[in-house]
Length: 322
Image 1 (tube, helix red, strand yellow):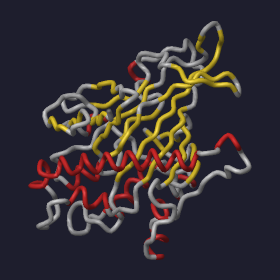
Image 2 (cartoon, rainbow, N blue to C red):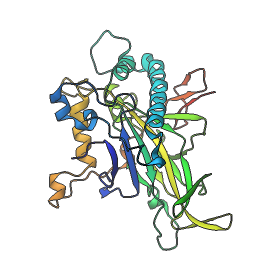
Image 3 (cartoon, helix red, strand yellow):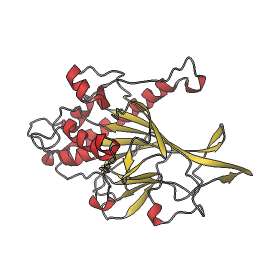
Image 4 (cartoon, one colour):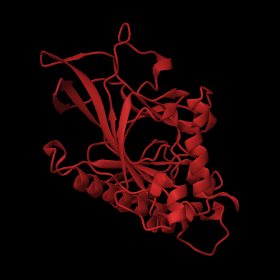
């Protein structure tokens, strides 16, 4: 069973294949052990099992890791709540829940104990022939997929030049490497998040909750050239590091029809992307995502005064902290 807790690698399936090119560290940045009914915890350990942290006393290389993880994750959530508050009036006529409340999106996320942050390490791409990529390799670092959250907060990616145990941060050495989305005009667009900004993208749960007014954003991550690169005369490999926060409601919250809760929806998503008994028996039931399935409308949040441009073609929802 995949629990979305602590370290994980190669348990996720993208485009029908096990994803071995990235490793993740999962945790809830707000709550180490959410206070929920034991039966809910048993049925949904992916959200409520509780955090696992590395032993910082025995390994000085991870000293401060837990505090930094929680502080950054909490900050992203705080900004995300401002975004949902600003979007509330735009989506409220389409919300698939019969209620008189006016803070459905913000309220769901503000009271949720199911948020998950994911620290991501994309391993250097393996050598592959001529070291070049074509259009079919566009999702070489992470396959095309949809997030199943309401919204996902993203920080600017870091690229690391690695030589054995030595590494240092560098600018992206490959112009085409990075995050890509398919926008509502059906164009594939590269998204570059500035160092002093956050970006937010819409997830499948928000698409369900808004009756399709806000569509989930298809996205992938493309690697640069495979093999070693040269920097200041030295040969090394390049990895990518980033941090995503999946802001999502508790599993009992209704997001669609009367029987469609976030919990039932989550189980379907996990069935698509993670190993299960049938796969272990050799039956391929992994979901293959087609980026053409969804053409999302894009909403943009920009600058520190929280202004909304609902018709903006820019693929990222970015909040700039000044």
